[in-house]
Image (tube, rainbow, N blue to C red; front, top):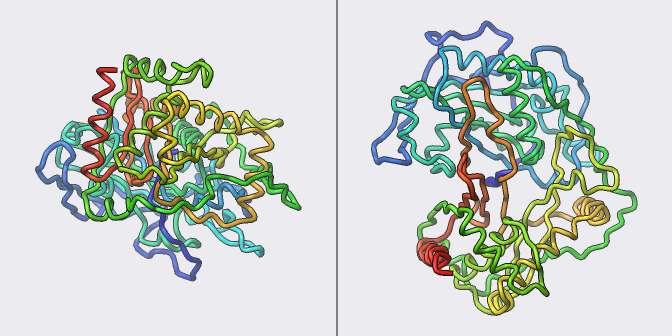
Length: 471
């Protein structure tokens, strides 16, 4: 799944937002909607865009759905963060908003936990309260420009993202905060965007893709090709816990290189890089040069090894600085008893590579690739069950400076999210400074890689990427 800015959440008593109406009330026609106007800076040009946003209405499941509560695993419990995504479409019809809104009401019948709210059980653990169905806030917006004026929308500026998605004011209050919000923004050219904000405790990348594709299937009048499974007790922690750690991802490392000051003093710059087949082939040759370390590696392993090393050099880490690399690994098929097809929840492990900067740059890139391959291979049934027990027992303290988390979305089929107006382009935002994203380059071959760095570090990183042309 994509990364997100963590927001502290608390349990408190508060009435639902009175400005939000229910879909059970008569559907609002365009002339009945009250719009608010926001200035929005474009990504491609310096001109100011104006959008008009309606007041939210609440979409409920079309039919009665199960009540009670949904268990959240320890993997879900540590992922209470909101993730924003934007799907961009170049064309639409006059009924696009109604089609997407009505399809949402239908898909919520199958994915009913999305319409619920978080609560705490008697043990103080989070669950999804399906009795308290407050629904999904849905917003319609209009922009005064063509969608092409937005430029490359893969990594969106925070201000722009904030206008293409809707964030509920109650987001920090667990028992009333929606688990999903949706906003359709129409552009003058006929294109539109669908912006969603979803709580990561509900889903990982594959679950999010399955939900969005199901929503799109219903919008096209198709039956669901995949029925979701909401039983997360399969990933319950064992009693007593059987922890086989230690786990390097929980090691707290010191910022001996004073990287914090670099991030505070300089502008944080986000940039995407395209690694075409030729560059990926070059990296794979470099990563397998020493066959005693590894004779074969994937494009992910080769690129991850390069990015880890180049980013660490760009940040001018001292030789005795410890550095960590983590990356989500889908384990649905790695358990002795594989998870049911359609499992809806978080089913990723985060293996970790830990070493000093000295070790990282003094060893060949093939050794770095070897570390990553070994970490991936460590994700076994025993590793997963032990990690679930560990997370259920100990509190996760977050990632320290010196950490890089690589999220690879290259295998997520965002192009399947066709609501009837063709394949979308996918974009995101709120990318953490500790995060790097690997994304498919649309219909082009290769991998688009995006990350954020302080200005001087980005200049260095850019040069290291350019040096690949001479490798």
